[in-house]
Image 1 (cartoon, rainbow, N blue to C red):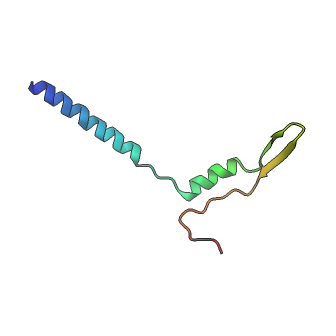
Image 2 (image 1 turned 135 degrees about the vertical axis):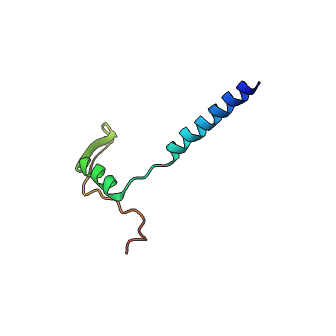
Image 3 (image 1 turned 90 degrees about the vertical axis):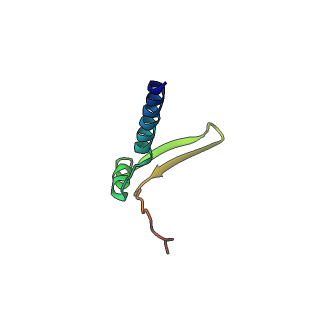
Length: 71
């Protein structure tokens, strides 16, 4: 019986330690901007043939984390 409780406690503590690592993740504004730079000048054609077409181009992508409203 003691072995069962020890094994159960070990499993529960292992799950708690493992899940704790999943909840802690940080990323900086610089890392996000570097990822956005890789996708700069992204373009895509969308629409319904014969009805409506659109050509979308995204340029100068940048993030500003933790700032107030732009004025």
